[in-house]
Image: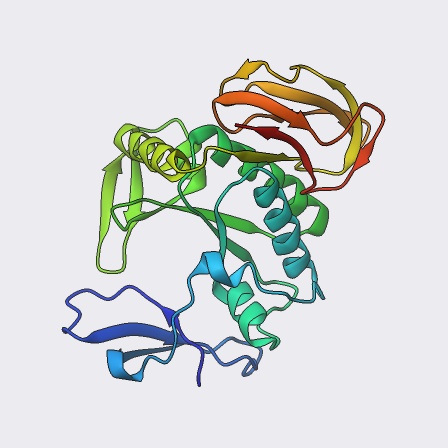
Length: 260
């Protein structure tokens, strides 16, 4: 099997898929990219970005270290995150698709504006430390992808790209659609494990077992990297249990509370 990446193609013939093939080996110091069309009968397997990022992989370079760190951060906040581009190919194949100049391309699924902002801020910290550019795209239910930076910028429109078209979208409508996606995604989750997004030390509880909480209400105050960090609830509900106590040290992604 030959790994390929689905790409945009206008006026795509029925039964065909537009693909991009990228050899792992550089040619004259440059990455070759080959555009092609393939019939559906030749597609052996499809793997979405959200599935690719869950694979086990060795974080052998700065790019994959960032992918792993963002994966843990997103998992801790119950945020849907995927990986795209060369990083995805490297994870899936185990081949050297990445070099020191490679960017990291990530995809956010159904989430709210605050979650987008939080992931972008964390990605910025990781990017600055590693000297690697991180680009984050947000997937809308209508099939368009929008740059996270544009959604957070002070603009009225954003550029949306789908597999068949490029369009200017109303930013307010895009954010409302994301909000509805987020609500629908979480509607079936009546019990939520609340996880620490970063390693650190538990300082105190802001809510007690039995308290009613809303999304974003702070449950726990902790200390991480000599800074105050908070662990918010991701859903509306009741605090059922704390899995930690003040003074405990926790790792990124560790379950610290249960909200139902």
